[in-house]
Image (cartoon, rainbow, N blue to C red; front, side):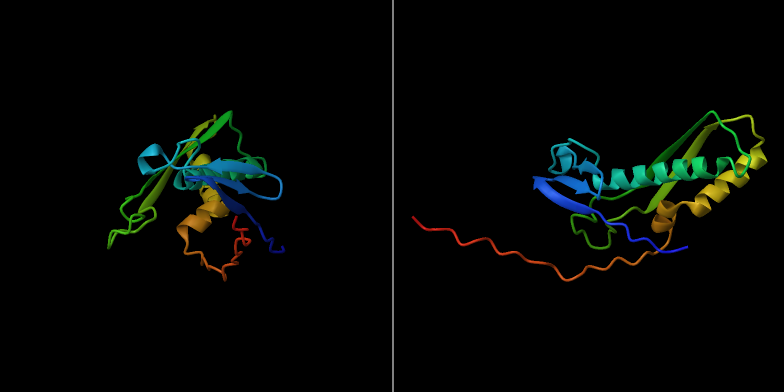
Length: 154
């Protein structure tokens, strides 16, 4: 299979409110008031947790039929431990999650062993889970600087 390039753009709107966009979709991202935001949307780390839960649910849905698994309801609860001191620059404090945990809540008549095998497959195939669990290189490219237009002095 071929490699696809996925793209997103995050544009600061005001204060800490950001509009994140892909080719066809947009979401807003913010920080809570306690971190200087306006609390109008999820913050970036909540968005990461949500992305993991959504990815797990989608992968489960995509592979349930081929794995012979039936369920009535599936929900993924995700949480992570983060010390905001890392973002503030405190030495020795990592700015990211120390650990991320998730629990799959599934309503099904399937036997436990079948669900265990199925959820192991889901975890193995979830791209967001892989991004979080493995060291994916993140590389900053050369910034593109735009200079403000000269303003006429009156």
